[in-house]
Length: 132
Image (cartoon, rainbow, N blue to C red; front, side, top):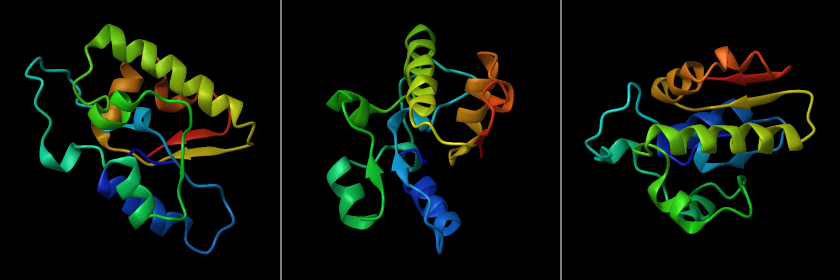
């Protein structure tokens, strides 16, 4: 699983190379700034790629389905904290519904810290769930 930022997708591609694992892209996998700053600016390196560009450049990746378009285009980088909390719960439920023994998420340090600040310490609350 990777967030829709180019560097996360590139890393996930390298990690998954030569394996039969499922490869998903989900906008709730980051990137996310932490600590949160109310400037509502997303640096170019943290802007999410559009789904059609993801599929064109990373054809092996599967897009998470049933998500609103603004989530793909805006991402979670500048989502206000209460909204991010709702998104986090939705993302963890989605990951749990994959019904896999292990789920690895490739993301950035800000996203890891943001999830940890909500009490998901290394995502150890979900057996087999790791975030990098």
